[in-house]
Image (cartoon, rainbow, N blue to C red; front, side):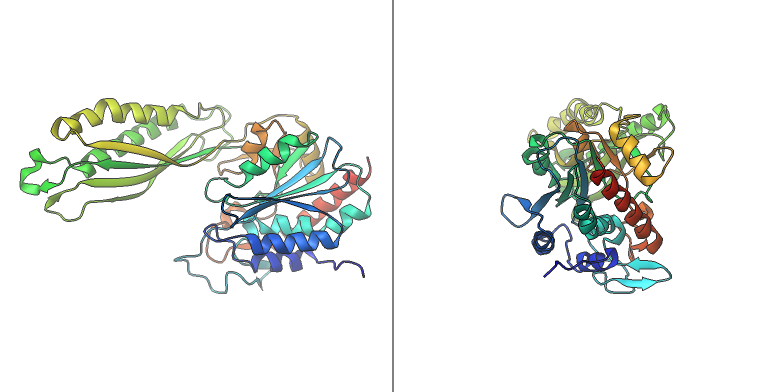
Amino acid sequence: MPAKRLSTREMLERLVGFDTTSRNSNLELIAFVETYLSAHGVSCRLIANEDDTKANLFATIGPADRAGGIVLSGHTDVVPIDGQDWTSDPFAIVEREGRLIGRGTSDMKGFIASALAHVPEFLARGPQIPVHLALSYDEEVGCLGVRPMIDAVIRTLPKPQVVIVGEPSSMKVVNAHKGIQSYVTKVTGLEFHSSQTHQGVSAIQYAAELITYLMKLAEEMRERGDATGRFRPPYTTISVGTIKGGSAVNIVPRSCTFAWECRPLPDLDPEEIITRFMAFAEREVLPRMKAVYPKASIETSVRARSPGLAPEEGSPAETLVMKLAQCNSAEAVSYNTEAGLFQLADVPTVVCGPGSIDQAHKPDEFIELSQLAECDRFMMRLAEFAGGA
């Protein structure tokens, strides 16, 4: 009995039906994909996390031992719906006015759905160039899952010709994006009665100094700008997202914690901002805290770090994907993807996928049916290319 074919829409309905919010397991989705691929005679390799609650999936259509393959990469996790005002069930597709609404439709299960739906087309053309499917976990919390997959699989393959990361780009070719680095800084001082501020060490006060320094760095980055003018905004950004500290207005606060991030341009030294911040904390702020309370501290830990994607004009990836997407130029974006990590593995990489980043992470996230149709045409051209070598 032949394996059942699913349209891109049917596949997307199945994928969205799995609640793969990053805090949850993605194993049910992975099991579904593995069963689907196996039914078409495609074997899969799973790369699990340390506690076996999540897994990457890697599969090859065509000759696995041949170099020059094309990797279709997508993350299976989605962001939370907590506190968002959805007008329908986020994990069930609803169609309205030519749009499919559901969590992950745009970011980025639409691309995965199109790739999976076209597996029969890839197979039917007897691919001479391997097409690899690389599905990862925990992209939304720091591009965590793809790292062991790159180490375990990508670096051991006959070198692929190109990686296509299918993040929503409105099917435009993206050859450059910013990196992301996020941190948590915890300031610990000494609580005291607020009438005796000279005997206490206010964690909030010193955290405010550190945040003010970050804002000065942000202004400097803005003035330095981006020589290419391709990014929006056209400079490295720094922002503070959350802050928590203190217990009462009449107590000098003992602790204050704030989370912050920077999104560096691809050509910025990735260590510059954190190095300068740490130096300021150690040399300018901490000595004054310790002068009052020797056990005072400033501790900064990494939440997530993912590199930017540097442009490689005329690379095999850019050339091929521009042809498949029928684009005449490549663009730059400010959001971060897994593409920079593939590039660090010395594989030419670009971003190209259906949907708009403007819809990602929002309530009533959607993808235009026209975008899925355009991605389907892209996949058909890829199938023809892979089978025509």
